[in-house]
Length: 137
Image: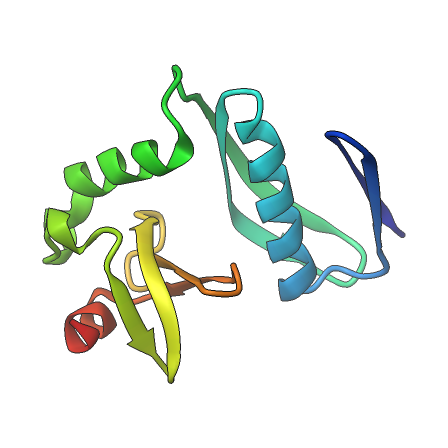
């Protein structure tokens, strides 16, 4: 089974996945989020379960009402950070984890332990713990 993904911008891109794994689903998730953002929709895809040939996920979309996704993530962070012993000013800070640089970009409350979303210089997204954020701060 193959999944074809089309993104229309100035040109058409086509990517074929030959199997589902953590990397391909992460790429799919980010591509879909980016594509939906162009239409003013913040898309979240979580509760992902997969085998080599199938996957299921919970999709949640929200209208951005003219705000960019980064502003929405900041607003979400400010509302929820205290639940995890974090502070509003930690959003956007740069930290080093495992010798690599990351920027704190949000929270995933559906994942209580690994709820802090960080993005690497290469664009890779990783989830980490509030404790690791405190240790790097």
